[in-house]
Image (cartoon, rainbow, N blue to C red; front, top):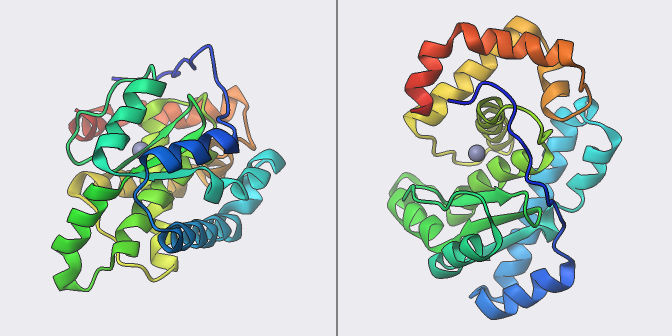
Length: 232
Ligand SMILES: [Zn+2]
């Protein structure tokens, strides 16, 4: 259980656009048209982040939003797992429901195309489109891309679920959330009600004071039994 700091990896680097392009050529199945569609979708999501939360971001984070469309790798499952094994020292994805991840190693968002397809096929009878499912994954991982990396893992997960849900509902997109995800959203919502919009400033790194951070951690500590159930 992680209520405290998440230590950063010693080596944090950016994968250059050239490397991203070569990975795409090697491992991606996407047509140029689909590639463009995902880029546009990411742009729309990024713009929504600015519109809703830009005022709570440091200038650096605001600038990072423009990078989002160029930070997304949509790969078939094989490549999705392969990339992670090859590039990340972080734990491998063993949760079968994981459709995407953000890696500090490389500073990149990776999405599992096959899982998104399966999920959207399953949800299509309710009217969900594949882009809806992809939007959910991209919005969640974009929040991780924009978060202050030095914060507690648990706080960052609560926030990513909350921001993704809000972004999707503002875009009128079909949003598929698990029960656990919904619980995370509600806890974060309560946290914002209790502490105020300063929570956003902490999440997006505009406020990096210990005082603000520990106010949030204190609140989370008080509801640790509830959090244990969600993060178990
Ligand atoms: Zn997450």
